Length: 96
Image (tube, rainbow, N blue to C red; front, side, top):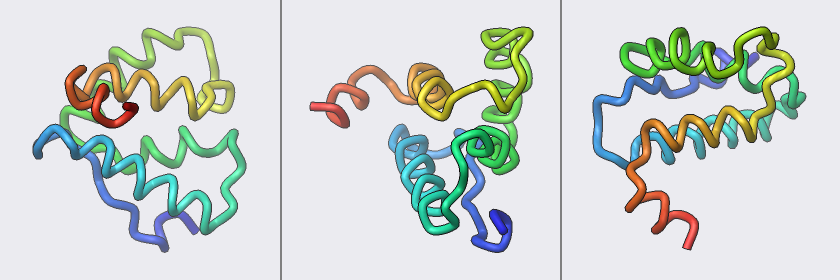
């Protein structure tokens, strides 16, 4: 069902707002499909490519060593994604 919604791919090759835009689109899809929290990280990471996929498979997985993807909360995932891909100046604007 997630792939049927044609989620955007996130590859970190665009401007600094791309991560926020991607998260918003993914969250809209999750809301439309009434996605359970425990599946959000698993589904979202299937829409990652290139640098974003590398980040997930290496840096992020190291951060969550010993934990199943089902146990990583959406909030934990999005916080780390923003810390890595969204510059502090953009994060300040987004949350001001």
